[in-house]
Image (cartoon, rainbow, N blue to C red; front, side, top):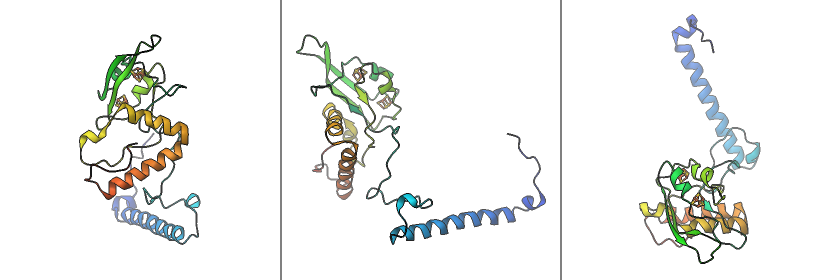
Length: 205
Ligand code: SF4
Ligand code: SF4
């Protein structure tokens, strides 16, 4: 791109440009305020409102794009068993080194190994998706559409274990992505009400 080297006299005075900037900002403020009022009194619907970007999250939420990298889940086979074979490729590919796997022998002689323990420390995770790319058997995905909750101030609460990661797959399969997101919001609301209460009744999602 070729830049214009010279500024005009008016531009060099700055005052006019500053006033133009103020007008744009104030114009956006007024438009958003009017749109917000129209949304509040029901004169406009959310999908018709081009301007007001603010939503009352988490009471209101915009659907994320299908490509959004949400929280992880461990996928299951037809019998509901974990697909992961404990090959460690995800843990090796992880740049944050936040995947911990403890393999174990499987009772079924046709299956070599399975993860006795599989944990992701989501406080360290950078949600890059390398683990998903590295998995040769499609055992880990980030298609849940949910993001981390506002956890109580205990770093251990960010560690997601095998059960939690498998449970997301079950909910997604049985009830669909909307149900998973709804339950995620309910848990967030429960945590917001009692942020320092570690014994929150809301299930871990
Ligand atoms: S998303 Fe990236 S940082 Fe997070 S667990 Fe997977 S590989 Fe590691
Ligand atoms: S999730 Fe995939 S890559 Fe990671 S250990 Fe299991 S099978 Fe291997």
